[in-house]
Image (cartoon, rainbow, N blue to C red):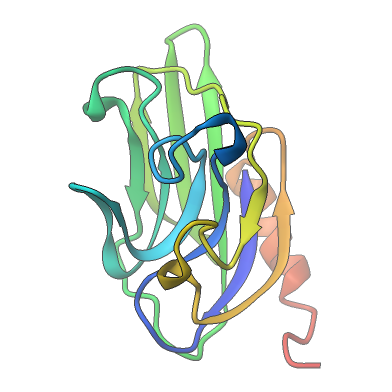
Amino acid sequence: SFVAWVSRQSGDSGWIVGQAADESAGEDPFLDGWARLFTGTDSSGSETIGVTNKVSFYIPSPTTSASDALLVTETDTLPEDTWALYVVSVSYDSSTSQTTATLYRNDVQVGQVTKNVEYVNPSAGPIHIGIRSDDEDMAFEGIIDDIQIFDGALSAANVAEIFAFSDTCDPNP
């Protein structure tokens, strides 16, 4: 699960946080990169994911079927010059073989998708904050603060707790 405070200053596309591909092992930066939280659209070759001025979370397909890729996009536009807490929580239910990604803005769920696929991180690539490693055009134009990465799913109560605690901090010290 990823947690990040975000304030978009301009532009419509950019990585917030994600694991890049391990290019030294010959992985494709777009197709083999692992989970990513980003604004706008992200593309490589003929594949484009995401929606202009909205935050999305993406995990590439672990199978040969492109329909197995996991993509969840928020319903509202990310305004400029406004701080928002984004949380994406990913869980796998072995009893149903389903993976669910839930996207929150502040403490409100803004998107969810479930797929009948288990996603296992195949990459040893580095975590990138604010830019996709192979594409300077995917630089996030704004401010990213207080990133947290969890090795498990976060519940709605966990998200509310993170938001409530963060709300007591001054984002502009």
